[in-house]
Structure formats: C-alpha cells, structure tokens
Image (cartoon, rainbow, N blue to C red; front, side):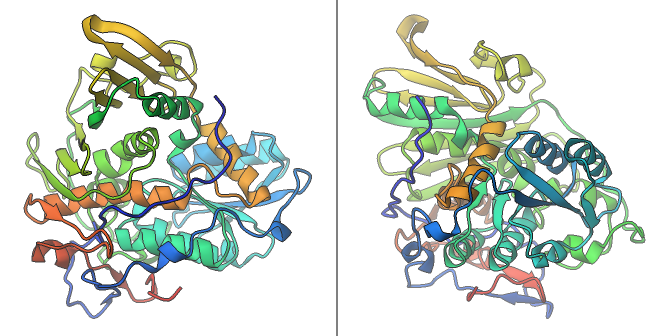
Length: 478
C-alpha cells in the first residue's frame, strides 16, 4: 500500500505539557530569561494555526531547481546531504554550514563531485538564511539548536528538514509549529519511518481489528554497550570553532571537548542518548501505527546510572510508562546489551525480518487477539498468534531516501509532508515528558489536556521553564 499523500486532521483532546529538558542551569543568571509560564490557562496558540497545505501560488515544478543549505556538518549531516544530492530530485546544495571548521570538508568534496561545483563553507547559519536564493535547509545540529534554527529558517522564508529529536522542550515544539504556519513553510521532521510504506500497512492492519483491542504497547532502544565515559577538563577554545555560537541558546560555559563531541550525554544539549537520539524513532513510528494518538494523561519515568559512576547527566537506562486512557505505552532506552543489536543492513535493504527476541530497536503491540512486532528502518512487521503462529506480515526497506524525496516533493507542492511538524511535536513531547518525570525525582506527573500544563509537581514546573541566553531566545511572539 502506498503512502497517503494528504495531511490527516489533528485532534488535541488528550493531555499535554509545557516542559523542558535543558534546565540544568542557574535560573537566576542575568544572561537567561524565562519566556513562558507552564501554568498558562490558555490553549496553546499553535492549535488554531494548522493548515493542510499552503497557497498554490508558491508551488514549484520538477523543472525548478531547489537550492539547499546544510546546517550542521557532523557525521549524520554529511551523510544526509550526500544522500539528498544523489537522489536526482533537481536540487543544488549551495552551502555547508558548521561552527567547527574541522567539519564539513568531506561533504564539500563529495558534493563537488556530485553536482560539478563545491558548496560554500560558512560558520554562521544566519548567512545561509539571509541568502534569498536558498529555498530550504537541512538542520543536523546538536538538539539544543533545532528549535531556534527552525524558527529562524521559517522567518527567513526557508523550508526545513530538521533532525530528531526535533525540539528541546514542549514550548519549542509549539513555537516551531507557529513559525511553520505563520510563514507558510514546509517542515519535515527527521523521523524518517513516517515515509515507510509498511508503517501504513501496519496501521491499517491494526485498524482492521485483527489484533483485537490494543491494551499495551512498547518502544525499545536497548543498544550494545556498556559505553564508558571520561569527561575531559575545560580548556582553551580552539581557533577552529566558534564556541559561543555552538552553545547558542544553552548556558555559557568554558570550552570542553567532552561537551563538544559527546553533547548527547548532557541535558543542556539533548534529551539523552537512548531516548532523545534513539527511541524517538520507535516512538514516532508506534504513534503512526496507532493512528497518531495525542498527549498522554500521565507519565512516570525511572532509571539511573547503574553501570558507571561517572559525570554524565543522563541515565544509562530509563523506562517510562504513559497512560493514554484506553491503553498504556512504555519506552525503554539504554546502552548495556552486548547481546542485542540494531537491524542489520541485510535486513534494512532485503527481504528478511529481524530476529525479534534479540533486536535492540523493536516495537511491540499487544492486542486482545494477537500481537505485532514492528521494526524501524526497514524491519517490517509480523503478527503472531499463540504457539508462535505467524498470521500476517509486511516488509519494506530503509526509508531515508523516500523521506527526503517526500520533503523535496512537498517543497514543490506546498502540501504538508509525511513527517510534519505537528506529529513531530507530539512524538518529541513523549521524550520530554519522560525526562521531566525522571529529573523531577522519578515522580508521576499529571497534565492538563487543554493547556499543556503540569498539574501536580513544583519541581517539574520549575524545570519546565525555557531559559535562553540573550540573543538566542525563542520568543513568545515569532
């Protein structure tokens, strides 16, 4: 079954939050400013701005070249821009932008071979946004930059492909939606399983009732490890990096190579390695298979640093439980399972299914009749009855190219993309909720369905306040 090309109506009848996972900082610092109140009594403004497509007058044909810039030229940014340039989608990469001069060289060399000329190398993303020839950008920075970079890009009239986890707080997700709608910009989230055809057939199978009533579901990211970590001492900032720009919205701190190269292990820059950078893919695909449920009624998250007593902010294992009213969802993330592995390249691009019992990145959906295993990145799905009887299945391939093609197609058509910012926001919210529960003392948190507010914990409410350095704010009015 082919991917549907229209944008599904969005319902916001369930509970949500205004949270933040980046608040390990002194809230009284003069360089920071609280920009929102998590106890707001108003319905979030973005809900009244959502449209399914933008005006036809802005469409482009396949003969029109799309001019693209890359923001963030690390390993994944380099990979994705090279993949995009090789798709024969009539795009031209004009910029490779990174605050670190040691990054981006490989991308520039490879792009030069693919398109016959080398893109320009710049440090400051604002130079890319200022170029009126640029139609869109791919944002592959550390997570703490995703929200602001997306808002700036939309304000500058650029379409956006933003990597996961797409935001650093619920507030940021809300403002990203507002910016996309106000400035009529396409925003595709890097949750690429939204473009896997077999995710749609999984949803349709569940809709058919063949699983029965879905009672509980689980998303798992238990990768191999354990991974040791030794934080380096602060040092002088290398001449090759604009450290102030790298920090951007985050608190001002001295240069530290561990923060620079291992940013996933700090709350200031990420929602955790296993949750924000890992299980978000499974969460988003699971939500799609379940017909995109809205926010949960409550969340409880526990875990800890069990394997290494080091200086990392984040736990090496987390498990979160969400109450959606008519079913329960659990998330697990960690780096300690030498005996589990991610889906192999052979499976991602072939016809074989994963060995589910030792797959590190699986989704489990339990109904009253049968159960389903669902695999990200080309894993496909299989449904089993008792006695391990296989009753249904579908297989696909790694969906990155399909997701990029969908983005470029929507840049031309002005229709909302498969991984639209609305669903990206709701999926990212689950990561933020879990982390806030964990960071507020492993407490169950209750939420308001209308105002996306925390109802029952002052510590969580304090952590929920977004704080940005002066000059790097995402303001209430965008």
